[in-house]
Length: 440
Image (cartoon, rainbow, N blue to C red; front, side):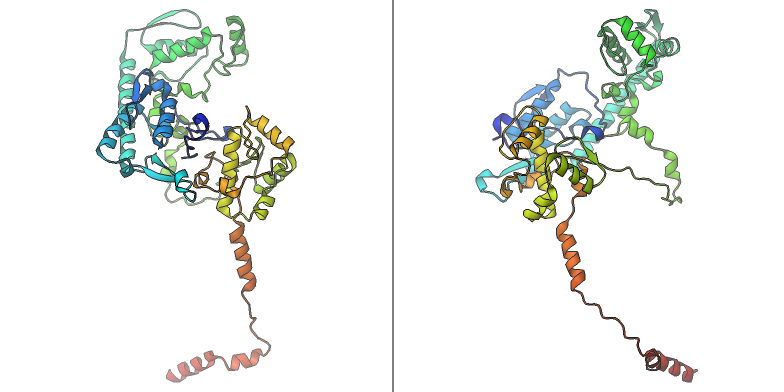
């Protein structure tokens, strides 16, 4: 869980983070396989409250605020309504603590301020099996639908580019668009829900929207010229709204088509190849606390924050005598406050993060850190951004200093070799050699 959900006592629940946050430049391409039945009602697992599947975020918010329940990796659940129904039944049979990890917030504070949050995730074998079964059932349904479409000879549709009518199998139209209009959405056998796919593409054309860059134009003539000149007669692979139309996205739980394609099965056969000399690690960049600036190491990002934002992390670490995990909590706290567009110095809330940073610079609040008891809390062990490389670059100054002290306290006595001849004559090895010679 990338960010622990905050208490309901916060104003109107505005501060709750219902999804793991991720920096845009490293955003993981999670497969979003939306259900076609968005009007289906999904019931809360702990009460009678329900909400449409299309309004899933409101149901998740209800779970956090009213029941302190957090469900991990929502996007990897193939059938969310059935998942909720299963756990609704199980929670009536056994207490929630039998299934969920319990996380206590403000554990060192007063008892009246402590709260227990419940985390339901696939660490529990029963939850993992349920997710895999739902994924397997979804895959079977998709493959059955794909087979029906492949064998269907009653397909009838007009080409969206030239208005020519096509009947028979869907592959006739798809091959026509690829051959005559240089527009290919992939091999027909790799596509499922083809009619819905073509409907979505036609809606884009009707809205004068380019398939690839998704810009909107004033008329169809301008749009066609743009797509022809820019070679945009293709869909954008980074638009995950299209993922549900490709069978490859249903094959493995939690894997996108990019990850599946990147796997080379031939490498699995090379068990005897242990040569890692050609392996190259991609540099992981740390992101500034206040802007989008990235640097490859801690020294550079600290220098940037000090010069551009007047924020000196090393100075704070020294003045407050911060241990490693306190540094982690401080970084996560600052990330959380800025994500919620709130100044951590005066708690003033603004519209955007940029406005908050500008306010903090003008008011001199950048180095005005609240009392340590305010942010040194267990909930800030959890990263606000799940791919925050800045956390991995923090130094454990306490262990470093201890290591330095130990090395300086241990005395080292050099061996006296000033009289090397006497050492050789008095060596115990001479006696051993004599005893061995006499015995032979």
